Length: 351
Image (cartoon, rainbow, N blue to C red; front, side, top):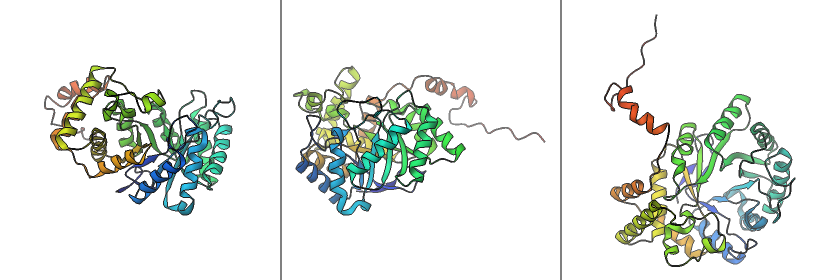
């Protein structure tokens, strides 16, 4: 396992995988029993993993409870990230969900108790709630940093324009900075290439990438049965609903056969190669429900795709960038004097 700082706005050092703990527990009706969750955690730690990602909503609080027990013997060794917005109760309450300062503070205090710790290394705002002003969110996060309840803050599943505005506000008002973003990213969900990832690279934000297997679609298992997240959760999954997704799965399976590894490892290896080419650290969040699944993820650490294989996967999975990106690309030859490789220098200042 290799290590990196989480973006360029912090010295927080994390492992190249984050262990997503959404499967720690069974209160959702599916997941890993506590003993299996413990084995998953231990194997991840033995492999050098230090970055843990959970949420108050995961398994209605059970994920945080188990994670807290697992890290108790060596708390400071791990980078602990959790989230708030959705609440930990099976039935959401009007005052126990959302991003208001009231719910933020109450949620963090409850998470600290479940996790058995006095501070959270990275607190994510799980989702925008479309109600709370971004100034209230950022000031609340700044207060939590000042109080020592959290060390860093990030925005999860926020659109790029909201993140950009948040970063600007923290800089202007000298509040605790937004250090990273978290969003879905895989060979079957690459819309983050339009705005989110270019923004993260430009602003030096770390990016945690969830669901690198497309909810299991990229393993090829749903061509055999619906067993897995598709059947157990019925959400946060992809199906072969478009010709492009079918073509992506076909290509993953073909390269898996060429290289003698599993389709899941091919899919993760592509995300890791994409991360290696990024100007800012990108960290895949892996979410195994069994030790076997975790071993597959760990095996992907030793896989290197051939340049031609990476290019094939990138091409078949590419998403249209849309306006204005495509129009700008079309206009570049004219802007640069007819030569796409020539950059026109700015005119010297007038004396």
